[in-house]
Amino acid sequence: MSTRVDYPFVISSPGKVIVFAAALSLRSYLFVTRKPVDDGKITLDFQDVKLHHEWPKAELPWSDFAEKRKPVDEHVSSLNAELLETLTPHVQSVSKGAPPEVIRVHHSAASAFLYVLLSLAGPELFPCVYTLRSGIPIASGLGSSASISVCLSTAILKQTGQLGQSGHDNAGDEAKARINNWAFVGELNIHGNPSGIDNTVATLGKAVLFQRRQPPKGPLITPLPNFPTLPLVLVDTKQPRSTAVEVAKVGQVKEKHPKIANHILEAIGEITKEMHDITSSGDYDLNDSDIAYRIGELVRLNHGLLATLGVSHPRLERIRELIDQQDLGWSKLTGAGGGGCAFALVNPHRPPDLVSGLEKKLKEEGYEEHQALLGAQGVAILSLAREETKTLGITQDTIRNAKDADALEQHVGTSAGHLTRLWEFFD
Image (cartoon, rainbow, N blue to C red; front, side):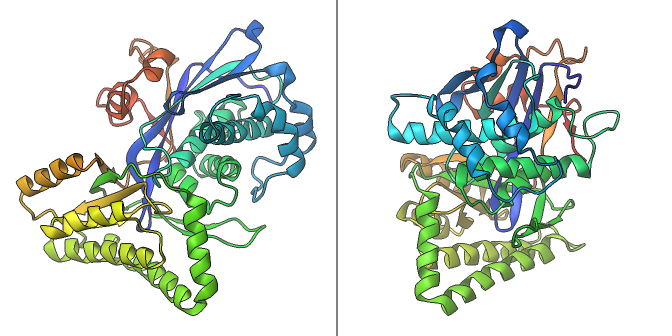
């Protein structure tokens, strides 16, 4: 399983929002660099959640995973309980004595990383440092964990020579399918029963129509490569929420009122189809008032249906209220709801000073606002071993110490003008 890899390199993957599943311009970045052989340790460094841990390579259960290794292209729909048990002491060694809420986050990240690493790699893997940074608000319904899982799976597949056999690693559909499959394994470790939507969008970019099917079948995925770019305002409520709690709320509605709940969920599906019809039509133009209002109405309806299922929150409704008061656009909760983030599609025909007033009001009330684009590109690789990239000053320390998402994007981002042509996307 050994292969020649030029270090260091960076992987990047986008977040997502759902009216249907579409990629955000906010991204995660993973810097991978090789350590001396005699170091003998594998390091995971995730500054945004204050996680830093080293595992002695010789102590990891490589042989246990090798005995149960699945083919790289086989769809994985569940985790192996025996392998999870084997990982337990290695996961529990992380962040001992930290508060419970910190331990929960650190252990899920460590479990996802180690499970994918040991499933794909062998003990001959060089000691490496994996430095993660997220420009996506974490635990806010914007797919940060899936973006990180995509970065990790891409890096490990690259290191083990399993991305494809073309002249460079961007081996097209085969590579994307493998990345997506193993990113889903990461998501299984973090969320238990993920839909697979988030990792699919983070891999493919742009937007997808996604239909989950019963195992052993994988999801039915329809990429939308011509999905247009839409400007968004993302608003972080700063309200913590639990995906499990919000999902349970929907489950209770389905249990108590199955016919009503099914009609609501079917209506949400119809919104997705209509949005697809609008954005894929030949005359699509967001500057056209009729089209802007049609899309906005679908966003508003989608939020209202989700609120009916009980997964909104007063902080989310306040965002909607502020936008509705001056007819500035349309907003919708993201992810599981209950807090986290909302996005606002701004009416392009409203005066800019009103939009600036909204941003000021949001800040006054303790919200955090991000400008973003919907319909971003998917996973990408930046090699720092090439002559043209060696002088860019991109190092583990500069990525680790970037003060915020904007600084990270300016330094290493796929949208940074001096780097755009150097990033390799999986087209």
